[in-house]
Length: 451
Ligand code: AMP
Ligand code: ZN
Image (cartoon, rainbow, N blue to C red; front, side, top):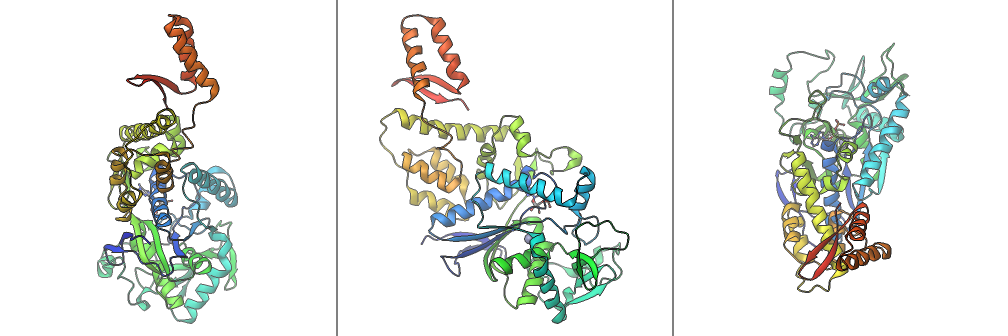
């Protein structure tokens, strides 16, 4: 069993990862709210967690991962006010909330596949767990952790004495900062809704009966519910974005640990945000790019994945199209090294799988691994290992040349020797339309992919 080290939010340091059961490593990834297309900032985190899963798998751990899709209850703000994101999306597009959830869940899973992200063992939709949500609210209420207001059932964070520990929250500061009191009925600034009532006259299509009134779960609840239902706490690793630390994950911990009297997760991993050309990703700046936007500029999802793997999940990253172009070139270079293996009897291979694994075992240090791959000679076996570790689909996307194209290469050579430049050019153009180019090297002509 290899030794994997990870940055654990609980202790704010890098620690050796020790799972409870190496044959059932329980991992939970906070998934997307499915109300619009995922942008490249959202997708960055899933690429880091793909590297985590692949690293653990190659260290012979058996991973059992659950990813949720938030299809209800995520309000536009973390403060239990504002509109439900799904309802907002539905109004904008003139669709039902169910249609919106379906459309963007499909789109997200499509992105997931196009990025060659390892499939989670379970993808859980929040709306499939309403009964279980209600059972947790009942349990919290029975233990005295909740109180009811006119708009929902709230978790009383003053009852959970370690509430501020995880995020090192300064509750006094938060109280002082809350100049505008948005909810008079809340007992503490950090209290949050575990259940929301549909207000009279409110247009909320997704609703369930509880406490004799229509309502819907608070956003944070679904993760506690799904984790307990599908994995059982404590889990080994919980992942998310850095923005989840002060509210979403803090609330998840409060709910789960109060309801079940057990620690929620032994390790917490959070990835930092990316900026684009130095700016925050935002609608007003018009810099929200999806994978389809990248495709329009001739970048594949895997070029983007290569760009993400050049950095690290801890630390802000700046995205630019020139850096993406460099990542694309790197991926093409690697693929052409595979193409070279089809043509040459190469020797002096020096790539070590153990050494490669050491880089990522050290807190997912993929950028050093990438440099090591750049500077080593790999066999086809080694490239298979790289594909298993990085999921860049290098071998599949670099097929050996077909007999038909091989014939065109021979015809071009022959035509050139016979100074029949018309035929030679025609063959070159036909090869170019199949993304093949001919390179004249010391060892003679070799073919390469151009994209
Ligand atoms: P949203 O659907 O807008 O709530 O975004 C879902 C998640 O994507 C957020 O909670 C973040 O963890 C992540 N995210 C959003 N923007 C970025 C970004 N610029 N860089 C990295 N992750 C992001
Ligand atoms: Zn979550």
